[in-house]
Length: 125
Image 1 (cartoon, one colour):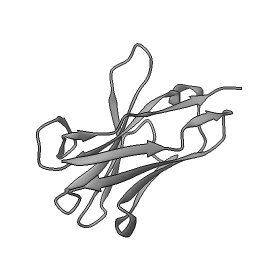
Image 2 (cartoon, one colour):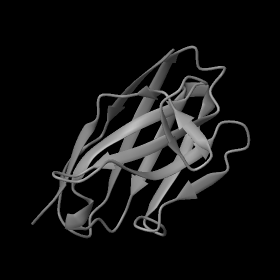
Image 3 (cartoon, rainbow, N blue to C red):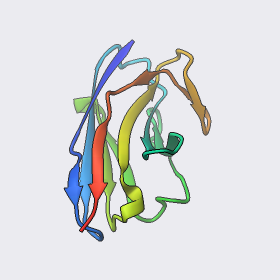
């Protein structure tokens, strides 16, 4: 299994930016994709972006398209989520996930079986 650790969350004003990082360790050679999810208070967890580990193909939910960018650094086993033009409705706990071949949460074409502990993002003035 893969271990994932997120960092980079915090408090930011509306219109501001943050970059989240997710460091992976363990058996990373067999990963199919990384994904970012978020869960706001009282709401269900939603998938917001993912990136293929083979060809770096990306996908974004409509709610973040044009504002967020996912990327990866295979040499560092790290995936990033650059978040620009943040809005109060982006406030949530953000989770990094990996499709490592184990069963988990299905979203887009992937099955995310490994999860990080989450990092809080708060957008407020």
